[in-house]
Length: 341
Image (cartoon, rainbow, N blue to C red):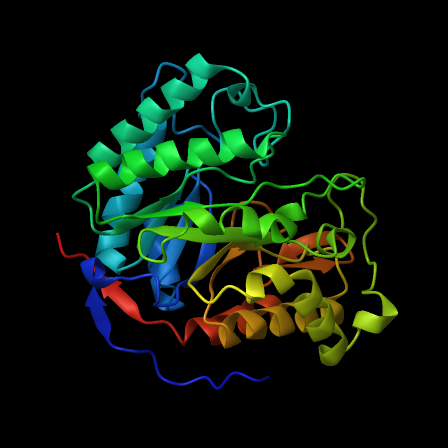
């Protein structure tokens, strides 16, 4: 492994966070308890990306969903207690065709009234949590798939401007558009990275992307993709994977500012040896470039949960899985933050 693991860094105030400091953590759903946050603290996780996929944070009237707000409020309390920063991932909007990714058929790209109500919801969200320093920012559109580029960039400008005006201490994550591949896996963000660089300022507006590549390897067991499929022969070494990662991420690697990898993962139906090699090589690339990253995911679904391993009887709990132990080693590198509220 190229990374040297040492003692964790000193604790800072959450208000002192800047995008040049690495975040290493998990994507989480809305099903966690205080005990889970205590466990994440024990792992030395310094941030979580809270994904409002299973239940929308926005209502269809330009407001906030009360049930989702209750969950976020509880997460804020837990995060303060255990010194874990929060990135809020809006993820699901009124008008989304799918819960977990964008679609060209999402209604808000064609409905100006619905788009305006979304901006109103962003404004309410920014106002409600502007004094909560443990919430460091918002990932405003998850895997967007609008057909028209100019309109999407204009939407990003309006939303990011609204959030920064109301809560200037927060960061705003913007993602490139996805391109749906013939196999249904959205891997196009890396190819569209240059579309958003004109909007990034490296202090408040930060570029983010998801990386699932090659999708037929990372998504084994999802949408009918067969399980137990090895990496292609040429990718079964660290050198081979590095060449592949550098080629597919070439546009992003030319960018010198902060990058946040909002999602990456390998399905638990993939071969264990190949999965570990893939994860270790990819995370080492993130570390070399000082990119922040969030593993997909912690307790959202068994197929992604690193505390699960494929057994003869199916996926089973395994707190000593190789994925989990690998992630724990990287989390030791984290600098920690306390709320300044």
